[in-house]
Image (cartoon, rainbow, N blue to C red; front, side):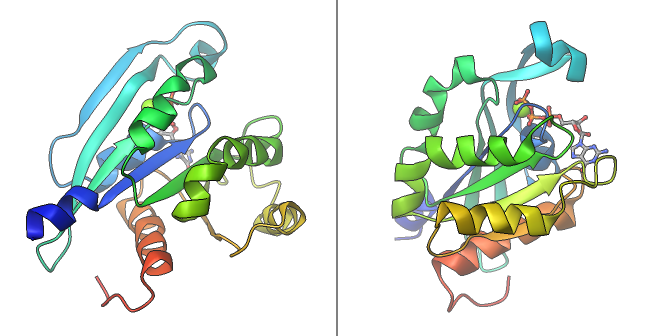
Length: 186
Ligand SMILES: Nc1nc2c(ncn2[C@@H]2O[C@H](COP(=O)(O)OP(=O)(O)OP(=O)(O)O)[C@@H](O)[C@H]2O)c(=O)[nH]1
Ligand SMILES: [Mg+2]
């Protein structure tokens, strides 16, 4: 029974290049993460030296003995075929948006669109990263965009630093509460 349930506790981290998907999984995982970093080329290289080309994988142990599997997607659109593959069997999405990008609200819209079907049958929580270096747009602007997009229910949205285990844990907890409001505090 436990293995059956554990198999389904799979959360997907997706979002823009450099938003911090790999960093977040590293920060939260209780095991050494599996990553698939490769030397970045073109526009990504201006942001950081490496990029995820297939997936990140980590595991979070919950106090009750349950495990949450953490899967990170590549951010680059050319690897977007991995998004569907990795989402298979997932129970929810943590979407990370890099606020330092030129148009993060458009990024938000793009990723919500790409994961529309997945979100419709699961849930999404949004973390806006890099707000320390790029405070604008603020969370109110994100909420306005979400209202305009007509998402129902309105996803939880937080400022998050992907390097912070606490911030990433908050995103995952919010997602788990969205999926199961009766959940005991973890
Ligand atoms: N200043 C600042 N840096 C952050 C924040 N969140 C993440 N970072 C940094 O931003 C970078 C994110 O890199 P990755 O974790 O590789 O990003 P990724 O989303 O996995 O990117 P791809 O795999 O290329 O799509 C790392 O250097 C993090 O330390 C934040 O909130 N503030
Ligand atoms: Mg990555």
